[in-house]
Image (cartoon, rainbow, N blue to C red; front, side, top):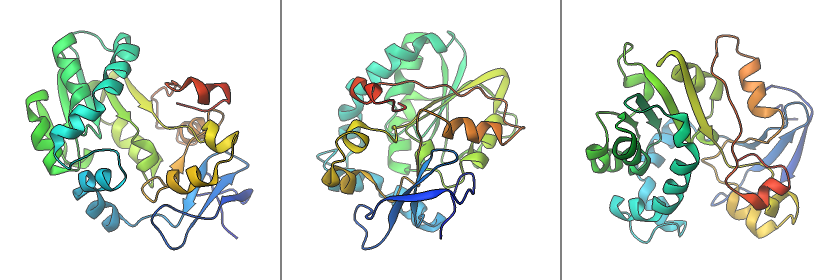
Length: 253
């Protein structure tokens, strides 16, 4: 028997029997908090080594043609522009914003260019961090490496939370770097993607459930569960959907 790795409930069912690129592993859904999670999780060392070679992984997945960060910057460009246009109202001009998992830096570039914002990059991949240095004022490999007194009006994590084994600890670390009345802006892929929840495509599930995503969050209770079970976390978490097809099926964005 396996318990939920987020809320620890025993009300869990297996929903898929395979993880991408792995010989063993499975995917489960919690009936209590509605989170989807995989088993086993990658270890901290496995994760560290993975992100050192993240650009090569994107080539193997068919996302990018080369491992050059300039290629990643090009490929991400249209979706980053869309995200910026949808979210620009969240950010005040001349404020300070940190993006965790900033990749090749396109969102930070738009924040600085369009809104004159002081930006901070947190990116584990050294190649991407170096490439994007022209887009940020401060750059770090992880949150733990940031000075305690470095605070931001906003902290963003786009398609990052689903990569985190211990999301409660991660969000608490972000909170420590918020100014009073600061905000955390999060975007995650939805657990109820239409190809998974409506069409139940096994080939798509085989490709989509990857070892670097320990959790998949739904549009119902799972992200709220993270917040409500940790009283010290005072950031407001909302939902934003960039996928109309998934939205029709109630997926979180």
